[in-house]
Length: 543
RNA sequence: GGGCCCGUAGCUCAAUUGGAUAGAGCAUCAGCCUUCUAAGCUGAGGGUUACGCGUUCGAUUCGCGUCGGGCCUACCA
Image 1 (tube, rainbow, N blue to C red):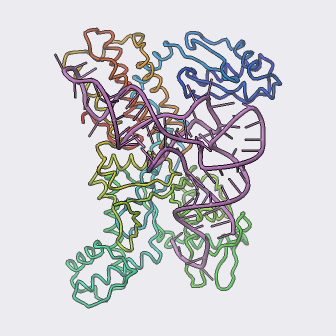
Image 2 (cartoon, protein in one colour):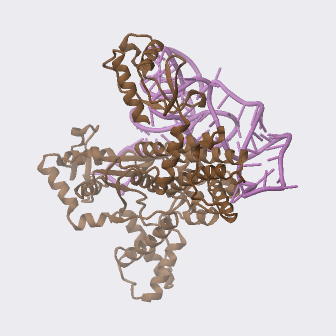
Image 3 (tube, rainbow, N blue to C red):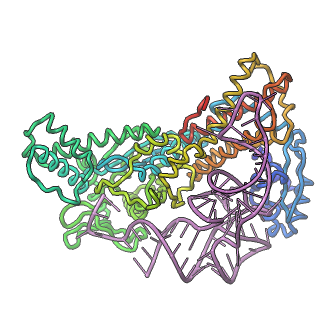
């Protein structure tokens, strides 16, 4: 419909003698009285055409020649809006399309299988995933699902740094706990990992190896065991949340395969790296940075930039045409250097899209909780899921714009779980399932052809119109990486359905009307179900 | 000092990317179950969109400035 109107209006503009106008765009008016689609082309093109907006609108409308079986009415309003009202016939046809498309309704092939990588979570395995990690996990996964729905071939990837100081401290934390378990009187440093899980790992080592590891270095068995066990837990938590990564990669591999040194050598060869005071510097100033950046410290240890550049280069070498990094706001300053490094190496850094999400402030007992894995001061994702379930957790993290610094009140989330907005959505779905069961119980055949013209009340039309917005929502949410708008939209869908349900009985003795309303219910169930699929929440048949 | 994000109803947040009368949930108040699920529906109150200039037919949205909050700003990751 959008495309059809775009063509007709563009043609009408030409007939009206306006040749250089921009392509008209359409949007759904906020108010129902303003029709089903509206364009502001007369307002924006008025200056170019040197005609007052309303007059131009008049000329456009005169030259439209629309198919009246699709568009019932066209009117000019306000300063020069052109409003289009669709016919019942159009809605009927569209409803049929929803039912036919079923689980595919809303899917697009815009990206045509474009190889796309989404990297997210990427927390180092130093402890369990906390509520603080939740937003990135849910956001990254939902973006992945949206991209799949728009035809991307998505690889979900988890990258972690296991070569740095953090992991050394982790290994040594386990080593010291191990020695304590053996009975040694050893002081445990304050800035080591305080969590009970470190003791658990140490105890496991004692059980399997006795005291034979007494002289092992922290970097070996201890670090390795910690990484393995903690990672298992992280993967379990993610799976509970509905998040599954296809690929895990890490920093050590980049060193072992020589990818990191390759970067230095190539930069040197291009004269984009130099030595100063014992350190190696990257000429970031040649790529818009204010100052050059150190990539290898005078101690010989690389800064985080270097493996990050090597890693992103690997991503592009692996053939991804779109690479998405989902990062927390604390990493905002790191990626310009990475992009500059890739540009320096001759790669097209525009293929990399960095999505930043703001932090969630966790509030417990009216106090802000400062999470610290080191100090073992955190609320884990598992604990939260134990309390409220994965659906609520996912929905909480996705319902707000990633730009918002939202407050997450743990007490409120738990206490009000009955009134959580996610139940409003799921309730609509369960309600429809219940209607269908009822209809089947009393022998209504859901396959009898429905005469959709019987749907004529304002509540029925409102549902139809809302359902038809779904494909456009999927497309625009994917294009702007804003899944929260899909959550908002689904609230609307549930809302119009609840209102329809309240006003009209679906299953009655009037069989033709029953069939038509059943179709409306089935279509609503499809849209809700497909939306839930994208958000990663369950679609309950009963509640 | 510089950079990024934010400031909208009592609280938590939306607002179709510059459109027409700024909307939801929670909370408060008043109604609706003999009928397919009341985890629902209807109604009421609640706003100088932090503040000030500017850009234009039109600004919550764009620009500049002020105030306030969060996060960055190392040869830490």
